Image (cartoon, rainbow, N blue to C red; front, side, top):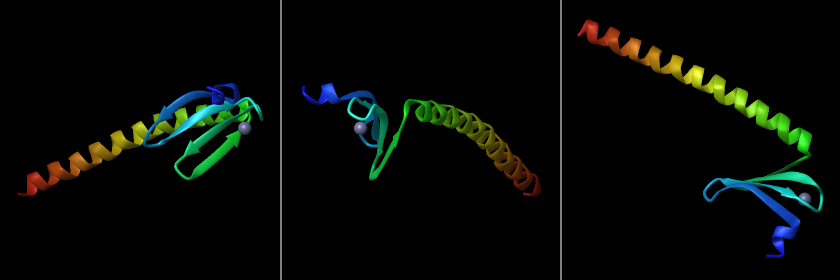
Length: 80
Ligand SMILES: [Zn+2]
């Protein structure tokens, strides 16, 4: 378990990637497929906030897109 001395795993998704704190450089590493990002703790927290905002806005957008699709569908039904 030598690896655990050097990094602290925060989250892992076997098909998507992992996030861990590295005790060597004291940064958060994000490994997403072939992409590897490194950021300090502050940057990581900003990234989390940014993603949470994006996720919330995505939900709103998806809701709009769903209702626009169902409105279009209803119009088509009306014409039929
Ligand atoms: Zn590191």
